[in-house]
Image: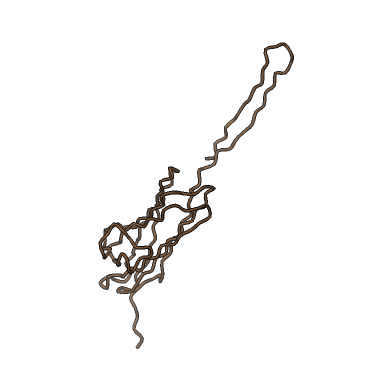
Amino acid sequence: GGQLLRATAQLTYDGGLAVDNSAEFALTVVASSSPLSIVLAASPDPVAAGGVLSYTITVANVYTLPVDGVDVMIRVPAELSFNSSVDADPNATGCGVTCLPGEEASFSLGTLAVGESRTITVNATVDNTVVSGTLITLPVRVNTTTGLQDTMFLLHTTAVQSVEVGG
C-alpha cells in the first residue's frame, strides 16, 4: 500500500501521418481492505468468578459482492465453558454438548449478502475457582471461502473481579 505505479499508453501509426501520441497516469496502490467488518464485545466487564460472561460477535459484509462460506471459530479459554446449543446462538459445532476449555467452537454463517450482518451470542460460565485479577482472553478467527485472503484474527480480554459483599 502507498506505492505509486506509473501507467503509460502510446499510440503510434506507421503510415506517415503525425498521429503518434502518449499519455501517462499515476496510480496509487491501497492496502486491500477486508470484505468483512467484525465487532467483538463482552459483558459484563469485569466479570465475577462463577458468573456468566456474554459475548457478541457481529460479522458484516462491507464488500461490493456477496461473501461466501463465512465461518467463525472461537477457542474456549481455560476459565470458561458453555453449552453448545443452549448457551450459543446459533448452535456451536466442533465441541461436545458442553464446549470445554481448549476446544474450538465453530459457527457457520454461510453466505453474507452485500450489507448483510449476522450476530453470534455465547453466554459462557466463568469457572468459580478463577481468582480476582485473572484476565480471560477469547481468541476468534473469521474465515471465508471467497478467496479474498480475508482470514481475520481477533482477541478480547475481560478481567475477573471478586464480588464484594456489603457489611
